[in-house]
Amino acid sequence: MALINKGMPKDVVSPAWFAEWVLFESNFDPDGLIVAEDTTTILGFVYAVRHRGLSGVPVDPEGGWITLGVVDPAARRRGIGTELVERAKVFLRERGSRWAVYSGYPPAYFLPGLDADAYPDGLRLLRRAGFETTSRPVAMSRPLDTYRLPEVVASRRAARHAEGYVVRPATDDDIPDVISVAATQLAPDWGEIIRQAVVRSGRADRVVLARSPEGAVAGFAIYGAFRADVSRFGPFGVVGRYRGLGLGTIILHVTLERMREHGAEHAWFLWTGTQTPAGQLYLTSGFTITRTFHVMRADLTDPTP
Image (cartoon, rainbow, N blue to C red):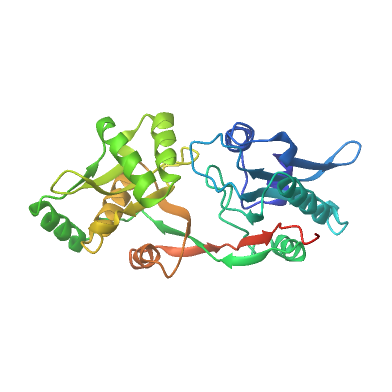
């Protein structure tokens, strides 16, 4: 923990977080936690993980992930980082992974990718190791201290309610439906994120959902799903056939209103694409970009016959 917090000061973690998201994660293999040390000190480490069929979240069996790694700033420029990454690639390749991604591991990712502005040495290291940038998601934030539900959103919500749509906080009875829809129609890992968050917090009402006139879950948002941080927004999505009705805008703003009521001074999340509909919605709803990440991928196919 001390090494992470020293070498990655923008992304400090607690022992409890590390235990839950690395040591206790279903696919954890201790051989993937590769450590560089001298006789008295840990100089760096890297964590590689791949599919073992033990997670409730679907994971591509051909893939491997490097989710976390750092070298002590005082020990850099000595080839330690290069050796750690190469050993991580060997670990993944020998266990059947055909490619490796930094980061974005569905069941338990640390960051969406590499923040090149914060950690330029990491970007250079991964590029030397054969990783190429495949996408550049962004993190966003917006203040909530003066937030009020916009009148246009309140009017749109009233119009949808008149048509039979309902946007409201979830109850325990709603959660199984939300989990199923999130996992099967939006993103494979979202259902498990919601389940774990509600079990951990006991707060089903941190989920805001929309139901259609027929009673189907049309969309949802959740806050406080990670590290018990009520200012952390997401996941958030609207089922395809219900898009274009403004439900996403309503769900987003109702969630922001509830976050403020529950003490959040700001709302933030780790990643979206700036050109996606969700990204455009965030930007027009008062969010600003705070970080940009590089999702990076390397081929692990052995070129030798």
